[in-house]
Image (cartoon, rainbow, N blue to C red; front, side, top):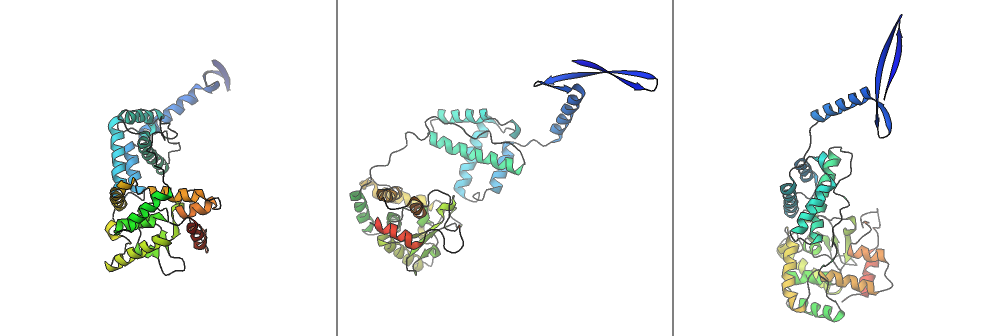
Length: 342
C-alpha cells in the first residue's frame, strides 16, 4: 500500500510517496521497519555471541558444589556428551528441539529414563545459570521435557517386615565394625548413609538430656535442601553405636565421627561394605531409611511435618529457619522415635 503526502514549502508543492508494510495485521512505515532491521543487524554483529561452552564455564565457576569431584565429573561428562552430539551451540540458537534430540540419543543408547532425567537436569541448570548471569531474558528451552517411561521399571524395594529388621539388627550388633555402627545409627533415625558417615565429631552431642546428631553442611557434605538440615535424637542401639563411634574417633584424634569414611565418596564406600555384608539377608543400606519411614507411616498419631522434621523430607523448612526454639523440639522428635524404636 502506498499513499502520497503533499508538503507545502513556500510557493512550491513537494510530493512524497510513503510505502506501508503490513506485519501481523498491523501496518508499519517501510522506512521505520528498514531502520529497525538495520539497527538490529548492527547490534547483532557487534554483540558477542555466547556459546554453550560459555554457559558451562559460568556454571562451574558459580556453583558452590564445583569443588566436589563427583559433581565436576558428572557435569563434565554431561557437557562433553551433549556438545559432542550437537556441537557447541550458540545460546541464542538453543531450542527445545535440541534437548529432545539429545533425549532420544540417550534413550537410544539404552539409558534408563531416570538416568536421562539426571542428564537433562544438569544441562537445564547450566542454561538457567548462564541466562541469569548474562542477563538473557528468556526461559530455558530445556525445561518441561517429557521422557517416556520415566519413573517406571525402577527396582522395587523388597518387603521390609519387623522380623527382617530384627535379624538385621542382630547381625549389626555382632562384632560391630564402623560400617555396622553407621547402620545401627540409621536403624532408628532413618538417616541417609551420607549423613552419619560424613558428620563431624562436633555434630554428635552426647552431653545433653537428649543425645542427638546434627545433620548440617561441612567441607565434605552439601545439603541440597533446607529440610535436610536438622537435629535427630539418638535412642537405643543407635545411641550406643554413636557413642562407640565417638570413642573410636576420639582415640584416633579425629575431627570426624567416622574417620575411615570422612572423604569424598565415603558414604558410597560405607554403603558398599554394608550391602556386601547384608546380602545374605537380602537387605541394602538404603532400606534402613525405607524401613524407618514405613514404621512412621504405620502409626496414626504422628503428624506429617513432625515426621519430616526427623527424616529431613519435604516442605523445604529447616530446623535453622527460626530464631530461638528451632522447629520441632528434640523432646517431640524423641517421643516419636520412642514409639517405633527397634
